[in-house]
Length: 218
Ligand SMILES: Cc1cc2nc3c(=O)[nH]c(=O)nc-3n(C[C@H](O)[C@H](O)[C@H](O)COP(=O)(O)O)c2cc1C
Image (cartoon, rainbow, N blue to C red):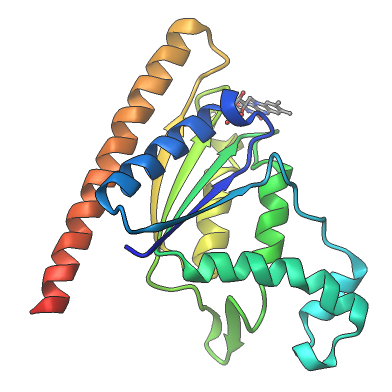
């Protein structure tokens, strides 16, 4: 484990349930892999610029064909892509906002989904170019979306699975903090079960990583 990317997508930062659980995961990983580099991208505190005309036009041009304005618009995206490509594990925290992800996380997605960079098209259709990474999604919601009739309103987890899968990130674990709008007992239960799930995800990831390291050394 060389690098961990922590993307924080709530405007509430320290009060945010998704941030608290995501930080717990990263702290746990860091204690198991002390040499790992941790990059924190706090989108709630430092939002990325929204997609602009220069970004849209420059995105489909080779770097040496871009105008100065297009190059400037793509520079932020290049940093985001670089952080993602360097990471072995992505820990992504987002609140559910109006049944989807936060606007801050959506903007980050707009910056990292890049033709010719994180995905490509061929005769066989699109191919994801972000391979060999684990994603841990930490998803906070006021309600509970595990079963119908509310399940159909969950555009947070299915969207993230789809868009990350599109760029090649199919190894995904999900930690949900659900029902935090349903009172103090519900909050306590949601946080307790999310902590247990988070600890389990890290434990399994570490054992998978140890098995892989042994296989590579053999
Ligand atoms: C603007 C806004 C929209 C929200 N929309 C939903 C929603 O559609 N469904 C839901 O279950 N909770 C919704 N919530 C509640 C949040 O998902 C919940 O408070 C969650 O804990 C926020 O994540 P955080 O604790 O990481 O900030 C919304 C909250 C806000 C502020």
